[in-house]
Amino acid sequence: MASFLVATAWAVLALSQVGHGFAPATTSQRVTNRPTPAIASPSSCQMFTGIVEEMGEVLSLETKDDMTLWDGSKGSGTEMVIKGDVVMDGAYLGCSISVNGVCLTATELDVDGNTFKVGLAPETLRKTNLGTYVPQSKQKVNLERASEIGGRNSGHFVQGHVDNVGTISDRWVDENSLFFKISFPYEYMRYVVPKGFIAIDGTSLTVCDVKSEGPDGENWFTFMLVEYTQQKIIIPSKEVGDTVNIEVDVLGKYSEQAWGAFVPKMEALEQKVKELEAKVMRLEGGNTGGTDSTDPKPETWVRKEQAFYNETEDLNPKRENRDNTGTDWSPGWSRWADDPSLKWTRIQGGG
Image (cartoon, rainbow, N blue to C red; front, side, top):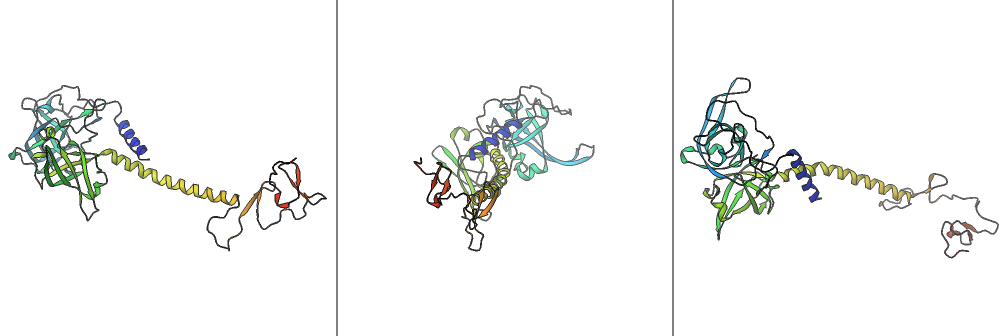
């Protein structure tokens, strides 16, 4: 059953992204930092792999009150400017870039300075740690370009839709590995499993240990970074008490949804089977339902009469099938049975 649900989840995800694959976008369109209408992406079916391409630098984080909305009115919003070299290769207005695991849209590009601007929606600020970045400290962020479905994926399916932030509660070194222990809200812990996928600040990682004790208990998991990964992402620079953006494996969510729709149907089917079993028992004259002595006697189906009769009834009060010898006819072997109890019973070796 578990394999069926996982296969279903993969199929749902694949169908939603059909026709594309994991490979960088081929467009090479570049624009400078000037007001330019957004250019539609050549493919709207884009995701990430969790393989960080570079560490970028946050240059500015600013809240404005004069941002133009769809109807021409003005509203407030937050914008972030980030410097990155690799992610600017092939970038275009409207393209998706993962910033610390958050899928963001490039609204302005400066090719000469290798910088891009993104907008941070209120939901983004509520669910992620991007609003805590202070440009003056030259804080780094993990960056990855969106990839199209179809090529190799060295990580896992990462949407860039952060579920919530986790807090580093401990960190330690195990030979050349760096371990982290992350406290995480209980409501998401059901999606975190040992040796399962998880995205931490946009990095595809493997869960090591898990402990989930409910809303009022301990809820945490651990992961580790190998030597190579330690040098390519920002997580090693974080200390106990710092936060990380976390996206659980989306396949777990799809499986849960599929299971939720499947269970009621299974329960209904089981109830139907029980009802059919009860009917069969009545037809066969059985009575295993645990009823008391006041229940009526089980009924037996009589084919000739096309009706049920009670075991206490005598179906042949006149003994119409008896011959003048007083024996009953047994239809199994064309002979008469002297013992009335043998009626409707085949007699072996009859002749």
